[in-house]
Structure formats: C-alpha cells, structure tokens
Length: 111
Image 1 (cartoon, helix red, strand yellow):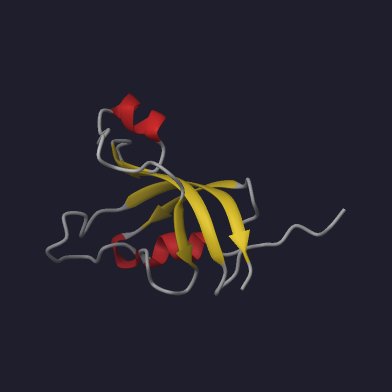
Image 2 (cartoon, one colour):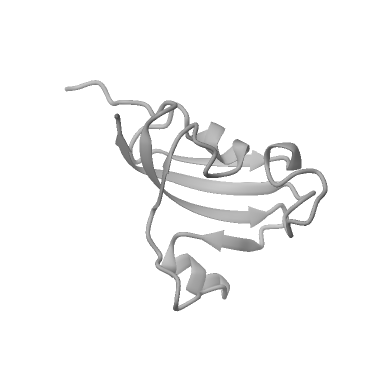
C-alpha cells in the first residue's frame, strides 16, 4: 500500500472545519448540517471544504500549523490561543479569544 502523504508547507489542501469558542458555542463552520444545527446557517454561503495553501497565510497561524502532518480523512481538534489566532487585542471580533477548531482533512495536493 502506498505511504499516506502528510500535509506540509506548500501543499494545497481542502479541509472541513468547525470553529467554536471555549464554551462550545460555534461561530463558524464549513459544514451545512452543523450550521443549521447550531443556528448560524447562511443561505447565501457556499458550504464546502476550505481550500488553502499551507504556509501562505490565508488562515490564522494556529489553524495553519494544525494542518501540517495531517493525512486525508484525519480529524483533529486544536485549541488556538489569541497569540496564534486573531491577536491578543485589536479590532477583529475574535481578538483576545481562545478558539477551538475541529478540522477534517479532505484532500492534499502536492505541487
């Protein structure tokens, strides 16, 4: 059987995720069923896996770091402190908050 590739910097990946506050309240998700369940569903949003290149700074550092080493179909929960999230303070509504992300790796494309 071929060795499963693990995501690394420079890879294009697609992930499903759910972002929660420490108390468990969901603030964002790529899963339509989850969004409906927790009451944050937005009909104008396209619920599909998030595509990004690891290392390109498209997402917060703590989220990006969590992707490194993951394999397809692997799920992981990661706690992101403000310093690796939206900052300790600032204008972003999530600044100063510790966030919890449940991430599922859907696809890894090596460039």
